[in-house]
Length: 254
Image 1 (cartoon, rainbow, N blue to C red):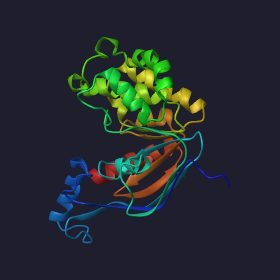
Image 2: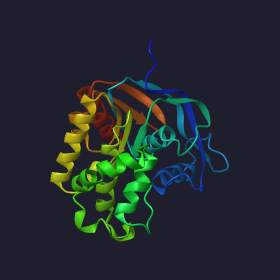
Image 3: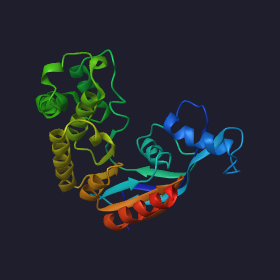
Image 4: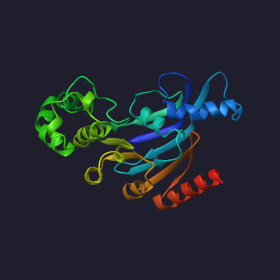
């Protein structure tokens, strides 16, 4: 069979608590578990963010990944965008990848919006020539023309997200990784993002979409994977998975 643009095969990722590459939000549940003595396997500050996760995404497919905080969702995105490496297993990604992780994560604070368009643009694989040609369209999409020559450190997180999405959406990536980016910005901007994601889908872009907004997941995704405590619980068509996920949440609360 033709190989898929994204394939994870038995992927494990271990973090050392207190190390730099794990965000606080993921660390706290693990710490609490250790204090309560649950998950006996956790010794001297090591914990598994992913435990034997396998899945693939077909070309042009949009896969939603849902699950509670600390389930391992952002770890998967960081592996796919090569920010971190897995402890065990294989991660394969083919083609040009554009990632929208930790809003504006790749931005340089002291540079202006315009300079960051060039910096980020080259990071998502555009040539300087392409950036020059797309520049006005990127700025226009972001709606930040009035601030484009302002240093990014003066931007709100919503402004950073808008600029980040505008750049990634123009990169015509083979693989687009989207994390919660649509929860910022106003409704009009969100609509614009959805529309652009639809266009990218028509261009056969392979997309991984991570969000707590289950309606957005239902709208955009062809298939949904539920992650729980670092393991893939199940995957299938969006409606069934969203129902299942809501049941899991209720079961945890009761």
